[in-house]
Length: 97
Figure 1 (cartoon, rainbow, N blue to C red):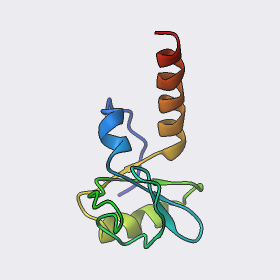
Figure 2: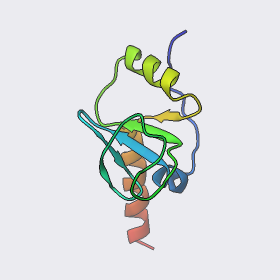
Figure 3: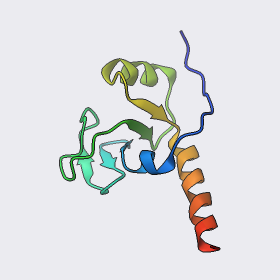
Figure 4: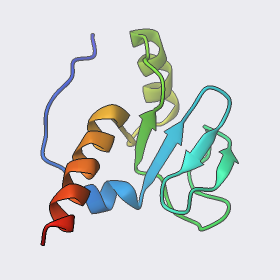
């Protein structure tokens, strides 16, 4: 099997409040911005947020997706760059309300 990018409408508020962002060395809770979280964590040790989504600050290979998908069944992998672009557009739209 191969991984393909699928475009799907998702609730940005839900993603914002349940996202684990994985960087080079550690991860961050997007909800409370706690740093240094283990990428295998199922919830934030600071605010208790349950992670339903994972985004990556770096470009991944398909082998990376395979390992995360096996380790974290049920968690949705999102393109963090698409997410950031979407919330930036939403924030810009809110300015003009």
